[in-house]
Image (tube, rainbow, N blue to C red):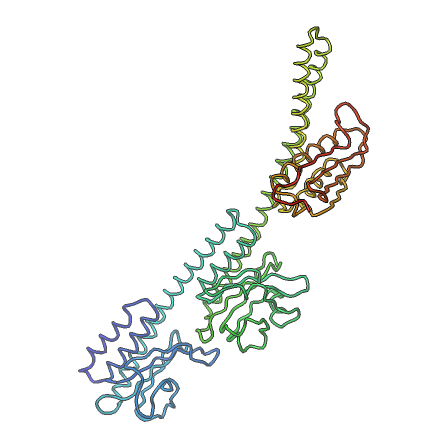
Length: 483
């Protein structure tokens, strides 16, 4: 039994180490209380990882020791070092760490000091266990909220690149990592970083690759996570950015047994390693994120399919209902014009018929535009012309031929390009109405001062097809010298 006079101090120390549920605060309380209770000038609580036989964290009190045992080696002094008092701390019968005290202020450590420290260490084990449970619960709550944030973001219409960046950013913050990166499989069998979130410039991260056949890749392709103690020295790491990182974990993103990609979460060199709790929570997050990515991709496909179907429906309605009614009205006006006794009335009816015919052409042009996929529009005139003709080919049953001459991209200004494309749509729509058409040729010529478009077809001409070929010209751009 320890000296009864010091029991109140022991009781106070026991109570103080259990008053806070924050783990790091609790550990600091323990080493402070141990030094005060035994009269030691210096103390250290070293947290160990029994699986790796290494120290993962250190808490000091009283500053660094002086004399022959100065500095951090206090955490690894031999047990027979003079003036050293050491007591292990167990949490649920598992080694958690050890208390080491040196330089008692008055005299030497005795059996009472050791007895008091053993009681404190036993209580510390209970307090640490409670704090770890509380910390795990808080971590679990954060990871669950992070996974919910990712799922919500991915299912509200984010693009593929944004979706991967969101996963990387959320995971980095939750794991207390210096970077969060997402890797996708490459065509050659390796993996490439396609999205990154980091405090530093992520530019040199994106594009880094894992070579095909590497040990890390084999493990990931097998659906197994990879945990690295030090990325900068582990021979399994082959990327050029590994030198700046320390502890890291690489977790497969998979759904229904299919590997979508990999989530990598490296910490800085010298940072604390990932615990079993960290690993478990990160793997649960990765599983949820992978499912969210699959659902988001499926939802995007459904939205795109719905857009296609809606556009096709509108095009069919315009073709089957609106154009047919307009055409019938035009025929009625033409019949009325032929029977009109007044020249003036006949001319008015004729102009009305021409307007209807022009309206029919515009509606057909709109139908062609609706038949084009709603993808990101090309930015060059050449690409836009090809997009128009490809869209027309969906209705015609064949692709019109297109030829370009001269500096089309540099010679044609934007406003002229818009007019050219509008005329091209009208010409393609007219050609679609021609009987027996099997070939349409489009020529864009910018070799002269301006630009000329010619659209020719091989169909049987009739009264509605208009001119063949269709020739459209734009004058030279005032901003050029025509050379």
